[in-house]
Length: 319
Image 1 (cartoon, rainbow, N blue to C red):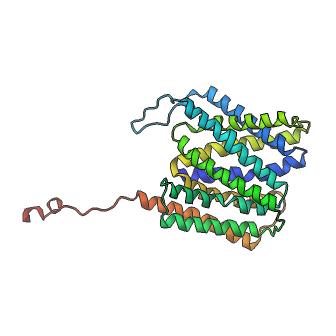
Image 2 (image 1 turned 180 degrees about the vertical axis):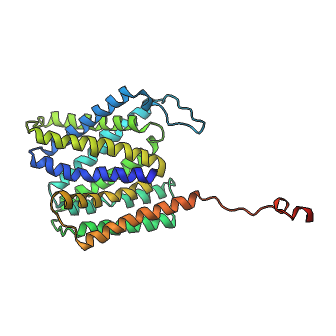
Image 3 (image 1 turned 90 degrees about the horizontal axis):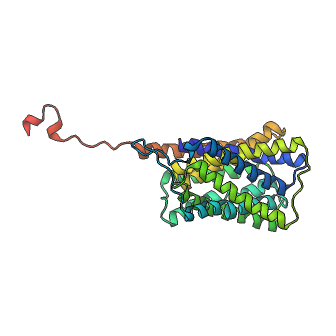
């Protein structure tokens, strides 16, 4: 279930680039997109928590009991900080880089974060670099490289590249911190706090810079709603739920399915053709999913133990 949730999250995040491009075409500015995205998502998650009190409880224990979550001040600050510092900074750096450079090259730099997450988690002793995970990381990295290079983008910008790598570093820290908090808060509550923190930071930034323009039409609001519901709320909930079950390294590797989804959706909705190189890259990314799943099954498989002589039929009397 964990890998499936991570893949669903990647698919939802992958659709955001398409929704964003359509929103820009409808007159939405990057500042308005970010503020409305996080503000609407925070309100939607808060309403969900109000209507479904059971979502505020701890996950069921092995005996089936679920108790209320103990939210300490430190845990509250950490969850809000994930959004106010981590997510808001990552999103701002990403969209700032997108204004300066080609989207495919931006994605190529940004998607160094799965490697950064895996290596950092191993160095911190929070994960181990098994042969299966190494194979999956290599396959996913090579596949993503082929998918993005297949677009033929060569619009390199030094400042844009620095912003993109800054977004990758920020997201690496975000995932590693979230891996700690996600085991102490239910996914919906954690997502609501993260979105609230991001909305507060972006709202304060908008006030300092003179506000944002919300005079775009109904079509722009529709695409913003798609970004908030599909590519933020649903994407975040499934990511936290998947991260809780798989750990930071596996969740980061599976997130490399996102650019494959983006490229495929662009081919379907924007009449962009998939090249053979991109299709090969997509298959490599999917093979990394299979490698991770095989590793999980092997880890769960019980080891056969030799049956004691006294328990074997016909041998007990000879003992």
